[in-house]
Length: 136
Image (cartoon, rainbow, N blue to C red; front, side, top):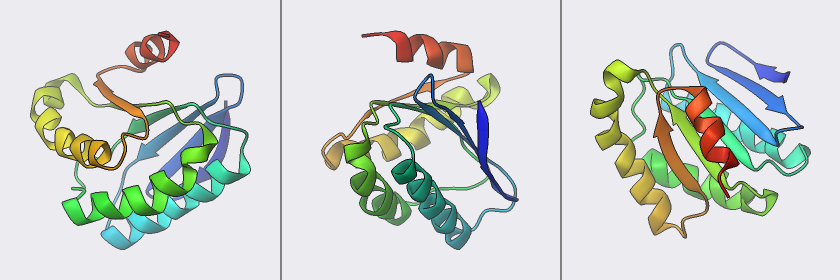
């Protein structure tokens, strides 16, 4: 695992062997900072060999509005779709898992409406995500 980027709101780790990027979001996020970080993510995805799996630790204090969801689809998912992403796993704490599922379903719906570019699923541990990644 190699740390490829770090700032005050985002850490990106890359595992070439697993074809995996891990995003860890935290700190004081604004829409502007979110967009800037997502553009950095796009730059890295474009530089790297194909990345098939993505683990995301979202910042639970930051709400991704429907407009921001659309921006993400248009400026992150579409430009990187040829890089081979197959599955994205969101890791959230067990105590808030049920509450967050409703919010994250709206993000998933936005992605489905935009050609379902990759599968998404929500977990409470990285281990569960890795098991899902290994499914054919």
